[in-house]
Length: 174
Image 1 (tube, rainbow, N blue to C red):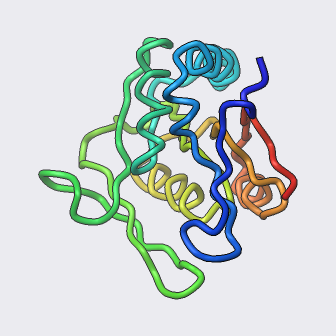
Image 2: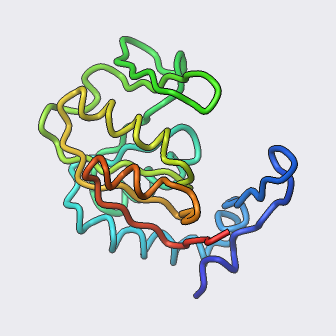
């Protein structure tokens, strides 16, 4: 099964000139979603994770079912102010400003092997920030994965510079 057949391209979203790759059509097709999660599981298990970390918010849709399938823990990396209790944060640069990503204090024990997941890798800014946050709390980031990689953008290179192996199910060259 070709996973790309179940990913919809939405032109001019969220702004003119952008082609948005929408996984909601993949999620809505149970057979395709099962295949996608099976393929991701076979790749992610190679990173020997103890915990899967999903990036807010579509990364949760990838990480949570994979954690269940692989028998791993699951934690959320969220935007500032979205997690209850005490959090640890990491501020990072955007093209025009800054943003913050957080994790709940104590969510991952120091030294645990963590794989970070999202739906799509583009510039790699948020994924890199997630890696840095996880390292800040003492996690060992063994890999990263997404359903979609926009290969024409520098996301994979950013992860390579952080020494984080990367896997994806579908790569787009434009």
